[in-house]
Amino acid sequence: MTGFTESEERQELRRQVAKMASGYGREWFVERARAGEKTTELWLEIGRAGYLGVNIPEEYGGGGGGIGDVAAVCEELAAQGCPLLMMVVSPAICGTVIARYGTEEQKQRWLPGICDGTATMAFAITEPDAGTNSHNITTTARRDGDGWVLKGQKIYISGVDEASNVLVVARAEDARTGTLKPCLFVVPTDSPGLEFTAIPMEIVSPEKQFQVFIDDVRLPADALVGDEDGGLVQLFAGLNPERIMAASFSTGLARHALAKASAYAKERTVFRAPIGSHQAVAHPLAMAHIENELARLMTQKAAALVDAGDDMAAGEAANMAKYAAAEAAVHAVDAAVQTHGGNGITQEYGMAGMLVAARAGRIAPVSREMILNFVAMHSLGLPKSY
Ligand SMILES: Cc1cc2nc3c(=O)[nH]c(=O)nc-3n(C[C@H](O)[C@H](O)[C@H](O)COP(=O)(O)OP(=O)(O)OC[C@H]3O[C@@H](n4cnc5c(N)ncnc54)[C@H](O)[C@@H]3O)c2cc1C
Image (cartoon, rainbow, N blue to C red):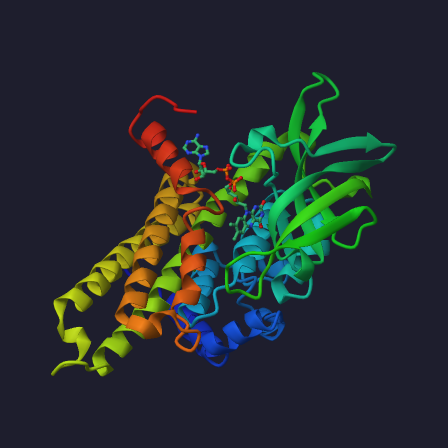
């Protein structure tokens, strides 16, 4: 990004992704979701075109770009009505962590499949009892000869059924101090002892969330990503990309809803003029558009900071972007539903089907309240509240 305009290359990337995704579109995406089917063709096509791993170094099959590039891909997919959560997880969280901290052998093994979409990687940190307080996770990694044995339980893990591996955050005992420290392990989803069951969710999406049971799953020594003592730092490397991607998911969704609502408001006439001529209809859409453009700007700033290597400043911007984008998406989708009147809650028009996905942006991957806690504490210097 130079100044306030994205590079010509980034803009071209957006155009190409939008063109590809428009060949699939919202109706296709919703049909898949309602039929319990997947979006594999789209996923593999993005992978083949090099967009999925656009942020991953070229020597491992990626495009050698930055997080801003993969965020642009995520946003354009969502703007065409195909928001893909696994974009947030596989290339952005897992891809970033492995590219930054994996050994050479680990990068060679896992990154090419993340880039071309043939070996998607899920990410599992959330646990039923720990929730937001991830310091309280209890999944443990015990040394067993040369390898490891993992035991624990995870919840709301996206796309495990579509993934070849899942990057699991577990706690291992420090041999010197006896304290438990977070470590990251790549676990094949077909490992004996790993089971998962889908959680019935109200989101209209082909991507599902799962409860994951890890019952004495044996792993080789090199399942541990990078350094045993650097787990927390390594985990943090994935958090800014995660937030930037979640923000892009939301801003794309908002753009989709606003485009649909504006088109409808120009056509639909019930008194003398199209409903869009009434400010009561136009203003909520205009307000949501402004909020969304502000969120996009902050998302691009956060991505530029990550790509410049300024992780501290990026942390604040990524949190703010994620907050603003979720709010913008909730307001945009709500206004879009209202604009459509009764049609807003039919399956045919597909507006209400976006409500839960937009709303999820306020909860995951980090809740609105935890972002406000972060900003209150780090940006405003207020006392820690939890
Ligand atoms: C669609 C979806 C996909 C997901 N995918 C994944 C995934 O792939 N991998 C993964 O690991 N996790 C995933 N998650 C889990 C997600 O990250 C968690 O749901 C989220 O972090 C919130 O945790 P929780 O649900 O346990 O809520 P809780 O921690 O129980 O919190 C409940 C409410 O209390 C509030 N709250 C808690 N503590 C405080 C406090 N100190 N101050 C103020 N408010 C507070 C929260 O903000 C929230 O509103 C997903 C969730 C969803 C909904």
